[in-house]
Image (cartoon, rainbow, N blue to C red; front, side):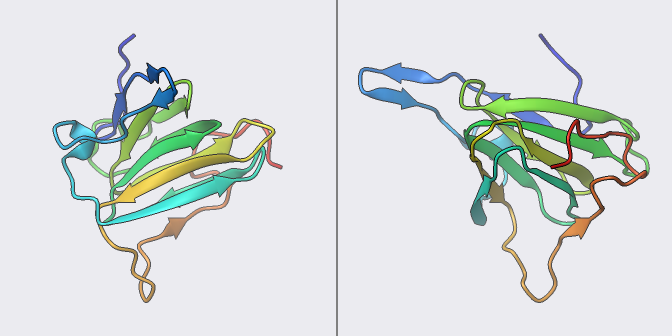
Length: 155
């Protein structure tokens, strides 16, 4: 099924490759749209069971998220002036059983919810190094009225 994503957002879904000794999944390749930017900084995040991490936005940095364990609901909101999808909300489910690398451009708000009753993990690949002196990290509270989405639980 094709779906229209927020302008500039790219989701590259890929198959799990079953081998005789396990499962292999490609995460990023230079010829994929999500692989066209350099990988300059990479972090692994472990989200506690049923945890929500929201809302985040960057003005310079592009995020590329790949779920390493569990199932995550990733919610995106476009509040960019002049964007053809301004006001649009996207809700995506990604995990080990449905692998994909998600590219989130600057100025797109995003929140992540662990849908599992166990720790879930993700890798975030940045195109810029983290700057401790002046972080490119913008936040809104989980229950903000500025974003027209409510997570189902807030534990």
